[in-house]
Length: 501
Image (cartoon, rainbow, N blue to C red):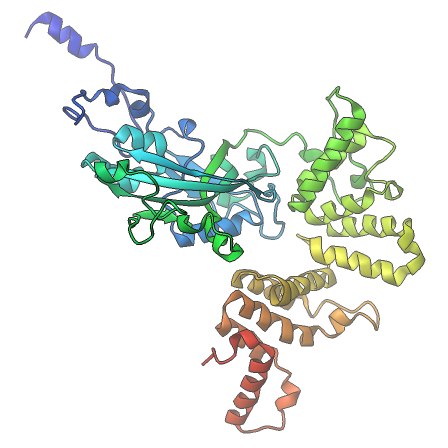
């Protein structure tokens, strides 16, 4: 062996690759080209999250999708994204103060179109579907080719631009967090193995819209949502084209949120007057209006801390209309944002003052108290007085029973919250029917919340737990008692009639 050849061997660079599956060096590709992909940017950076900030979530099944949607309905989603692996940190949130790290704005619906991706090599797999390495990598190396079709119907973005690491330090469920989901696309996708001929055929091969013949369309290996309904006119059908399909990730920033100090002040008069620092030299009135609009959007998104930060910035820009001043007309908004941020007592205090200097003052203190209670029911989170906790949870049960479908977990959380403090929640006067009639309200609302959520067994269980015992005292026959309870259940909880054994 020549000296020059030995020198060449020892001088070659050693490359360490951290991805769990690395493209191997093949001989010659079908096209006749040599396997230069190993030296390409895609191969060397195959599992580097820095190069894949908008991954498709093709690995998620229906359970994963449901869990993500439940998480995103109340909080910004925090994840650990390393290599070709992304894990949603489901415990990285504060269940008592939803939206503590932010929330997601309403969906911005778009007029989408069918898009396609073809995967014919490992390089294309890593570049286009990095999270698919675990299940598709081996098949691609074995020569299989894949085609994916997707349709984006809308986008939902977070109410904040950033999440800071200091805000996550006290929660062990956030250990290992690297990114947060700034936004996500909703729609549908389908992916499957194809031959050269089928991949080149025009139109949809997975049954999309008019271009896809459902009788001839291929069966997908992986799918999210239902491509065949993405252009339907019926609202129920189109709901099948609203599944999360692609994420937009941002890295968690080091340090502490510079706006945190004003938001985390104690619940005192001084905390209600906290104002953020202003560095902008823009037109004051235009900027103040922009801050107010941003606060409104964040309040609607249930991002209480974000709303307070925007109002603080507004107050610094427009000293004549302070949100901390009840007479300004903005106190009502700030009161709600305080409640959402977990400062229920401070929010109620400001709300009451705002009502007392408005046209509502003529209605008397009783009506003002009822209005404040109404705001507390809809907005309060975190630590609350027993009565506030009860009326907030009753509101959630009432919504789930008669207005909008909640999950069994949400119904259970509201019911459990009341059970914890109901003995401590005292009526403030003889007209405080929510507390006076609490047992009756629990008997009717809780089973119907579970019934609407689709859990009839749990609906029956809580119905029996709260059944008025005095009405059965004189009935000794267990079978007769059971018949009476079941008959009453069927008439009160109609969605579960005949569904409980």
